[in-house]
Length: 326
Length: 103
Image (tube, rainbow over the protein chains, first blue to last red):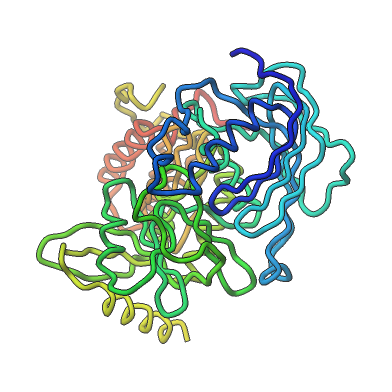
C-alpha cells in the first residue's frame, strides 16, 4: 500500500444520512467527497460513474469521535464515543451521523499504514477531552472494504453499536406513523415486499439503523452496501419510531405473518445485522441488544406471494401486536 | 480442527469444551450460539442447550450422566445422541475436543 499524500485539506460534504466535515489528507478527503456527491444525486450519471472507486487501494481512518444524539431522543440515549483509525495522515473529521452530531479530536499519525487494522495501536486523542462512554478497539472494515462508502457504512455500524442498537440489512416502509423493517439477505425479497405495501413511503433501501431510547426503538435509514438507485427512499431520512421487524420470504400460494419464539426471533435479527470484526464479548453484547429488541418490538416472519397486497396485512399485524403487548 | 475437516467419532471419554470463538446466550430456554469466524447462528433445543451448558471440558460420559438425570431417556440412547450432537458441534466450529479439562 502506498502512503497517501499529506497535502492538508478541509472539505464539507454530506453522505446520505451522514454529514461530514473532513480535514487533513487531501487524497482521502477528495475520495470521500467524490462518493458523497455521487450519492447525493441518485439516478443521475454519478450513480453509475466511477465515483465508487472500489478498485483503488484501501484507506483507513484514525480519529476520535464523539457522538451526540439528536435532540428529540437525546435525553434517553447514552452518549457514545468511537475511536477510529486512519492511516497515513493527520487531520480532523467532524461528522453528523443520521442527524446526530459527531465531533472528532485531532488525528495523530500512526507512523505507518494500518491497512489490516488488527492489532493497531491505541488511538490517543489530542485536544479533546473524552466524554461519555469511550469505545476503544480496532475499527477496521472487511478485507474487501476498499471504497469510502464502505468505510462510512462501517462507521455507522459502530456508532449504532455504541448506542446499544444495530444496523439491520433491511428495506423499510413508513406505516401508521412507524417504521416497518423488512429484513433478509440479498435476494430475499425485501425491496419487492416494500413495493407490495401500497401507499407506504419507502424509508430505507438496504440498511436501517435501529437504536433504543427509553421504551422506544428508533429507526434511521443509512447508506452503504447498495449504490444509489432511481427508486431510492421516498421518505425523508430522519429518526422514526420502529413499529416492527419482519424477516421476508417469498412464497407461493400463501401470504401470512407468523411470530417466532424469542430465540428464533433473535437468530433472525442476528442473521440480518451488519457487524464488523466482532470478538466474543462484543458479539455477546450484540446478542443482548438484539434480545432486547426482540422483547420490545414485534418481530415476525412474513411469507408473501407476488401480487399480494401487504398493506392491510401489515396493519392488522401491527394492531394485533399492540393489543398483545398491552 | 477447522469446521471443514471431518469430525472423528466421539465417545464417552472425550472432553467437550465450547470453542473460544463463540458467543452464546440462552433465550427462552434455548441457546443461541454464534460461531464468530464462520458468522453462523445456531439455535439449540432444550437438550442441546443443556449439553452446551455442560460443555466445559468435562467428558461426554459426565454430560450423559446429567442428561439421564434430567431428562427421561435411556443411558444408551443418551450416549448415542450426545456423542452425535457433540460431533455436530465440533463440525460447525462451536465446540472442540479438549485434552484436559480447562482450569
